[in-house]
Image 1 (cartoon, rainbow, N blue to C red):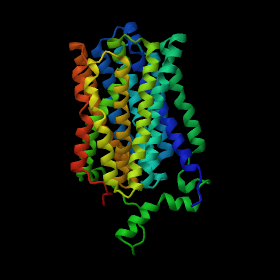
Image 2 (image 1 turned 45 degrees about the vertical axis):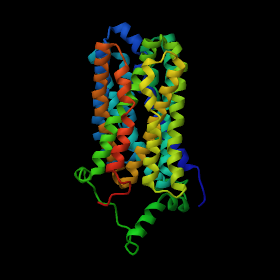
Image 3 (image 1 turned 90 degrees about the horizontal axis):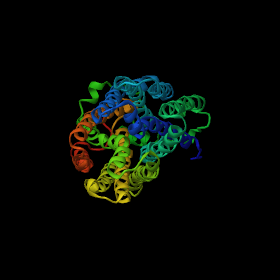
Image 4 (image 1 turned 30 degrees about the vertical axis):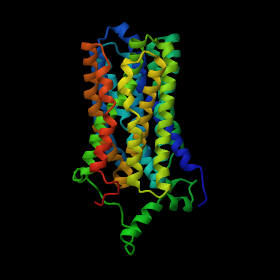
Length: 425
């Protein structure tokens, strides 16, 4: 096959979209102490505001996945980013808890489209053997965004005030849409893709077709309904696994700056280095998690073995999180939290890829959206739960204890209920 750089340019585009996605969602967590002092929020108020984001995020997953499958990656991704960028900028115009909840809801509604769109694009451009690695690369944008956000937000806030932090970061999405619309095309319509690369992209489909029905020609993609998706236990198991794990990542994202501030006396400016370390570690985990899974396949192991073994190995690394509330040395705390965020990103690289392993391409957007609803519901419930626990106990101990076991529970669910091979509809 004559290799081109087009596929990796596509990965770069969705990497940058994911980076902007995480910059925009992290701003409020970084500014929480500032806004809390300015507007008089309680811990419960903040929990409810985060919950508004996650409820809207879940609704956006339901709507966004189906929209992407109907409108296609180019148009669907553009709509999602325009909506979330508007939501990000709106934060600068509100003052009440209700107003922030509404702005967070608009942000969540749009941001929900990022991962269904990104996973769909990867499924369209890569054969299965390469998808986990490509997913790990674009998903590292979550941590690059989390690394860049403290630097940008701190500089803007100290110079111009916290409202401008929302405006400047919110504008990044509009710039990305212009670039996306100018550069992105599907593989079949892209002038830089030759027939050899198209054959490579579709190689695993051809192999599977020949293995099952060697004498039967390819047929057009059939329409698959949500009802058909829910006739399979894999749908429920993947949804549940997202329910019990996604909230842990939201917790890291929205409460780590506050935890460092309250438990270790770290202010906004001093928070930058610990957060850079934490999210650099998570970025490495995201890429390496996809790489490990892909290497197992290249060494001749099955896709089922590769995905599940990788998830188990990384799930074990999150167990030390239970000790964090009792450790006084901030750099040990930072390392353990960084290890846990790394685990989540390795998990994410593989669970997103499992969706494209198990479901046909034409419903990858819908199924990613459906599974993400589980994560959004878990995150919404956990945000209010975390806020109320902190309001009444002032302690993070119970939260860290529960979080440390969630990835093993998710692995067990996948191990028992999800054979990783494509479902025949």
